[in-house]
Length: 306
Image (cartoon, rainbow, N blue to C red; front, side, top):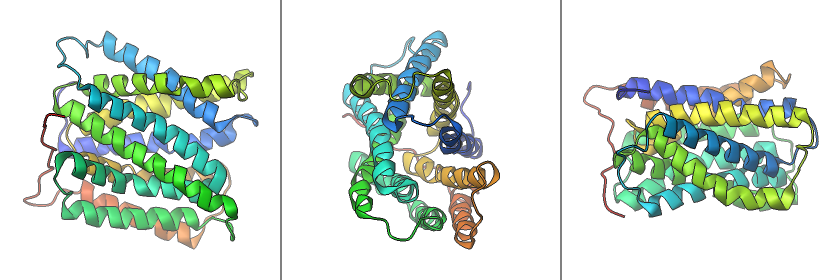
């Protein structure tokens, strides 16, 4: 990841990361039964955090690095943990469809709002348009396959799913600010996920082993830790070096499109008209951000103390 990528290349890196993120659900579905989703989420962050810290250290990311703003780091670590716990709890209570749409659909909104609070700069109009299109697409895409009648768990599951979106916004903005302050992107991801792993250790202690008694369970968690976490977040961090956090969050809404496509191709889920319309809306939103327009430049957040 040497050199600073252009805005177009940064957008491509984030989209590739989204493709890897989108394999998470299929990998879990193909894994052995009986896996506790909270244990899976916590274990993959613990493993990925260790690997990201080791890689950043080996690549010299922490040599001559600026002093870490601990408030930013703690906010990012809390965001990492909040996303994992909130997402898997929301999906368990509300179901995969509703839990996923609330969590992923709220991510760019939360990222924009968190960035607004931290920097006191409102996201631009293009972000608002792109996010509106993409969120509408995610809602249409995921709810197209939702069963009628959500049950009592839906309302209960919306709160942790929204918390997951807030967690995503927190660690996206925190990572962006750490990078803007001079920290290398791989170092920022390593620090946030390493600290987030420490916060999630109590989840493992309370719910262990959660289905990880088998080699197949560890194979699933190993893939989730190395591919849609370590590799994906290295690409994600590289994109954050150039693009503002709200833009990265909206680009990452390609994830549910990829997840739905894999569900059809690999898991045999049915193709619906709503799914097609939803995918087109998400792609339209991504196009607003990814295609450069004359006179438009990606705006980075200003670095300020605190």
